[in-house]
Image 1 (cartoon, one colour):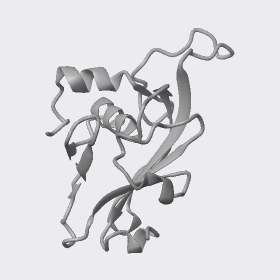
Image 2 (tube, one colour; image 1 turned 90 degrees about the horizontal axis):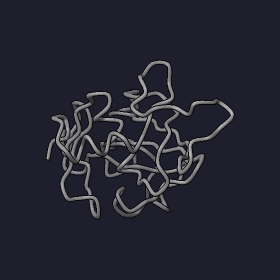
Image 3 (cartoon, helix red, strand yellow; image 1 turned 180 degrees about the vertical axis):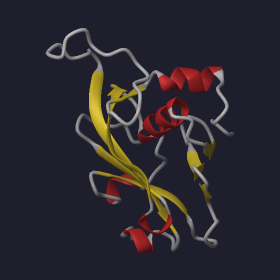
Image 4 (spheres, one colour; image 1 turned 120 degrees about the vertical axis):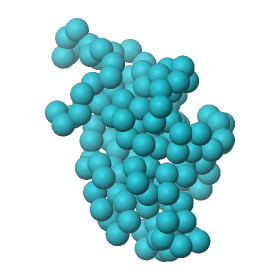
Length: 154
């Protein structure tokens, strides 16, 4: 399933996350007052690193709905910013096959996308659609060329 072409599901997903970076436009209305937080919203950051640490997205602050998964954050960002992304499965068990120009197995049989939250792979041993983000979480999407060994995963 390519999410680079808008569909009803992907358009709905784009409202789950708003980008709070000057380099990227917001996809959700902001609060009317800087001192009044939007209810049911939390702030996370996301970084995307391609093969050999290529920075595809520098650490960017995002606003996500409560209950959003790591996958929701990535998909919403991709839709809002026209970043090509391919995945299989659904919201219960999504598997990210490609982000940008990099897809699984592009650099060998054990290459592909991994994620970690707050620098920890141990809590991320299951689908990114099952990991529910918390306020302040730092999400990193990392492209591994060696089954995770080259990015610090066990």
